[in-house]
Image 1 (cartoon, rainbow, N blue to C red):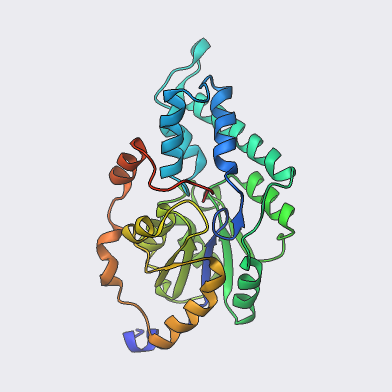
Image 2 (tube, rainbow, N blue to C red):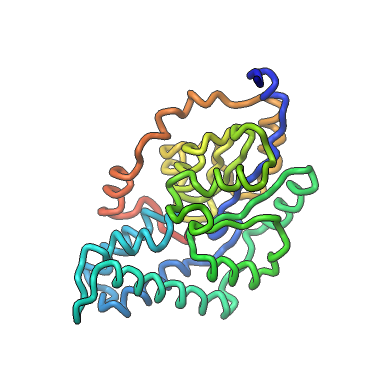
Length: 282
């Protein structure tokens, strides 16, 4: 059995990073793609319905996109007998197509210092995994557009981890299981730009759950949802990990309360004005 003293001497060998908003700057493409998808389903841009739905999209940045569209559309019936699930699937397909077109048009770029941070982490013997709330075709399109196909040994989307996506811990735990990079999940570092990234990391038991300010949510919101640290960008993560290793393992009890069910609060936030302008997905 591994003692707490043994654990504090072990390094953080697994690093799980979000993509859009954390390692990838997309300049608000999620909102643009959502508006295109919603319009295809008859939601008029500028309408109250559109504003309400967009607020929800902003509040739930990082969540699996099909889950978002199920919340927005699955309770509705469509014309011609279309049921709610069909409508949600149609919205999701439209969203992925619109986002893919924007990616193909060169509308994304790496967050400054992100590639260098990943390469430094790898050079230190750490396994880096990239995760997203997008579907696999969109994730692959982003990786191809950036020339990142071989940057990391593993990339994950919700479908790769059972389909639930964030705020569930599934993608972090899938990275833990598939890589075998660490023996204790507390030796995992997670970084993301949304409240759902933070909740996913906390629920997984990761020892570092770092929020970054290059994407959707602000410092207060990241902290309220369990961030152990808040950084200006992912470029600061390698130094943070080095400092954490020198200081020893954080006490998981400090943020035990943050691991509880987030959905009612998150849904309530979504119903009102967003806390911060969303610039990225998850």
